[in-house]
Structure formats: C-alpha cells, structure tokens
Length: 330
Length: 101
Image (cartoon, rainbow over the protein chains, first blue to last red):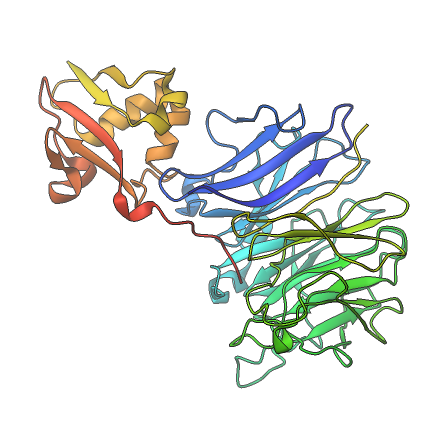
C-alpha cells in the first residue's frame, strides 16, 4: 500500500497548504499538495522531485518536507532518499536538487542505515536563509552558510559506534535534529545511539543522555514556546528497538537536557513492546497551552497539552504512523 | 502504427479516466519508445511506470501480448503492429515499505 513518509503544514500562505510525500511500492514516490485541508490533493504532472539525468539517480522516497522561513514564503525544502536535499521556490509544486551537497566528495562514503540512505532532517536558521543544517543517515550533520553552495560536516562529539574510531569527522547515523527559533545556537540531536546538545550552532555537541533509560531513539522535538524544553521517546538500543521494560514513555527535559522526567500517564504500563515512535512521527502545535503529539508504530496517536502531563489517545488502529504534524488553522 | 495500452484501475486517474490508451508510435517501435510517447502525452502516467532515469519501476510489469518484457528484451522488446500492451502491478509490490531507521 502507499505509505506517507513525510507531511508538512505550511501556514505561511493565505490558505494553509498541506504537503505529503508518498511512496507507492508499485508506482513510486510523489509529492502531493492540498489547499483545502486535505479534501483534494494534486501533484505536479511531471513529478515534483526528479533527479537530473546527470546524477543517474532516481528518487526512492521523500523523508522530510520542511517549509522555509517566513521571509521566503514560496520556499520548501525536501530531504530525500538517496541522500539529497531539494529546494522548491514555488510553494512545493516542483523542486530542484541542491547540487552543492550532492557533489560533496564525502557523499560516496555515506552508507545506508536500516531505512535506506537518506537525508531526513532539514533545520533552518531563523534569521539567515543562507544557513541550513541537514541530518543524513548515514553521513551525519552537515551545514552550509552560503545557501547550499558549500557544505561541511559538523559532528564533533557525536559518536558512531559502528566504526572502530567512534569519533569520525563524518559518517554518523543521526536520526533527528531540532532547534527552537528563538535560541538558534542551541540544537538537540537524537543519534543512532546517543542524545546530544549543541550550544554553538552545531560546531560541537555534548552528551545529554544521562538520566534517560536508553540513548537510542528517533524523534526529538522542542517545545514551541520554551526553547530549553525538549521531548524524546527512548528505546533500549539499535539491536533492541523496544521501549525499556516494555513501558513506553516520553522523556521531557525543561533544562535543555541536564535532567529528564518521565511522562507515561495514559500510556500502557506493561507489555507494550511494539509501541515506539519514528523520527517524523512527533510534533507540536503552536497553541496555548501547547500540544505535543506522537504517532506509534502500533497505529495510535496520542496528544498531551501543557500542564496535564497525560497522554490522550486520539486515534488508534491506524497503520504504522510515519509522520505527525499539528497546526491551528482558522 | 497504433498500439493499445491497457491500464490497471489505479492508473486510470492519471490517464484521463481511461483503461485503454491508443498510442501512435513509429513502426518497429520498442517498449521504451512507446513509453517515451506516453511521457509526452501522459507524463503523470509514464513516471509511475519508469523512474526519472528511464528505468522500469521494479514492481511494474509490462506485457507485450501475453509475454512479460522482463522475459524478453526488457524495455528493448519490440512492439509489433497490432500488439496489445498491458501494464499490471506486480504481486511482489503489495507490502508497505516505510523507512524506519
């Protein structure tokens, strides 16, 4: 069946636009958009994302759709498999390959992770559209300061436990990176083994996993109004991708990862070995109180509002939930 | 010559709702040339059969008459005058393939 690996809600437009990256096992990947909140969808006749002939590559899947900055209302970024970054300047209808990253000499060394060899995370710099950070599995963190012409790895301190030297310059299996727009130098990163924070825009990373029941996982999100408040969904380890003790929980830090608290109210208290969360399946809304949402591999969607610290089941019996976004629309 | 291309139901929305397309091709065309014509007339259909580098998608089967082109000359398989070409989803492609890690 067709999977939807990436969704976005673009609120910069006069009418909110939904974007969805789909993958049919028969008919291949597409990017659809909807300007009527999902009643009808359309995709570009010739295909929204196409690798140029010179690359000899073909789009395998869309891993993230990221609306650009407010100052660039028609820009949408797409992270894809094979690992590449695409940029749209027409609101997400068609995209162009960011060739500076595709032509990076490191690219040939980037290996596929368990889900394929993909660029899954695009992090924007709120005050500077020329500065972009991406996460690649594997490859690690790369940054550009010149709008994508040149890129440099930015993995200092992030472990790659699958290499003899666990601190290579690049090659890490980063799973997700998050930043609050009001504190642009601070970043949070869930790694394939390890949880990290950077306080210098990604130049160096420090371990913030102490206090967690496991340092493997996929999503990381930052509270929409409180920059130092961050949420994770820990698993035991890469070879044991289950909630610790079969008791799933979100872990929240309100001090940028120095300490963690367990939030499991409303979640199964035993035996929920399959209830885990993928990297794009956790999100927040911008409401007050704010909501934190996550979807599970067992097909549930939960939400908790600020102050209640209780997970409310809002959907169940879905297929594997790959992507979750929440937004307030008028 | 004209070649009839039969389409499965999931592809009809990108073929103007039709289950059979009559496609004009040069004599002695092969399947690649037939799909090139479809790329001009029905790009949203063609890109569901081939990737952007012109490779047949792995779980799409194309038959010339009764024969799967994978058992013949792949996209180089000749399409004889009057042939019926059938596009079908492969039974192997039915499972979801979510990226997970």
